[in-house]
Length: 326
Image (cartoon, rainbow, N blue to C red; front, side, top):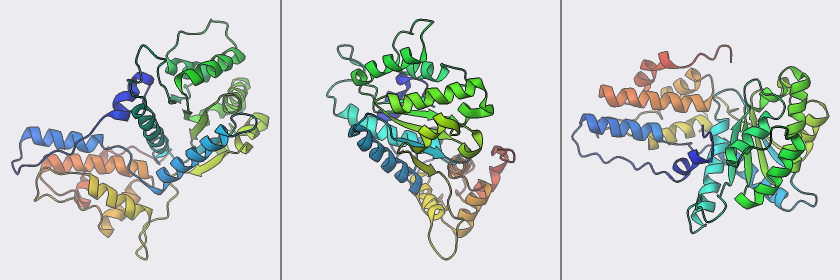
């Protein structure tokens, strides 16, 4: 995940050209094909489309609000369901458009650096101002004085936001903010409310089990949950069905089109009924994990001169992370 603004240029503007196949399989070609497959970014799904649309609508409401920024987008879902990728895909797309229209480098020293989006993860064992400090650190200015308060950080962020062209802030692992509902977590929830209602940016809050975590409980949580928020449950797709073509079939089709093998005689066969069911069942119904698994199976096929099919998926199940306790 991008840790600061210096990580964004190659993620936003980087290219991943499809490798050319000349009929001769060499070690170099295998490496290039394998690397290409691993670098394939977020695939378009119903979830990524819904998230992009929700962010655009939140932007519109925030830009035209009578009393300033208030709308946020909440993404809830199981681990590896694709929440973070959906949010970053929308942020990268918007950032690319903004940077392409600048007519200069986004970090041109003659101008304020262009930072359309901030991405932060809620720090483990988060305390007090840690979330605000993480946002400030991502932007890159000198640290605020040691005794800076919540109000000081919010005021500093309000001042710097128009200078850098800030449009949105992604806050990942947001369920950790309310863990335990102790003094520290309540303060963090208050800080989150202040970020959403007090900064001129669209906030995208990502987490797992917000209903159980407590972050959206209490007065501050109510403000976050009720002030025009769009709540999207990511990865809640119906299982594959022989009666219709659904989300899992479309995901398999996208994987089939994007993944490459080093020889024309090697086939990508992820759209068969059995392969679709294998992806769904083996990933425990989590699209993000299914994509990572398909990439791993593609690597297996590249280096074992075999098709990318159910057999390749079966050969790579051992490396899948355990989800029994997630």
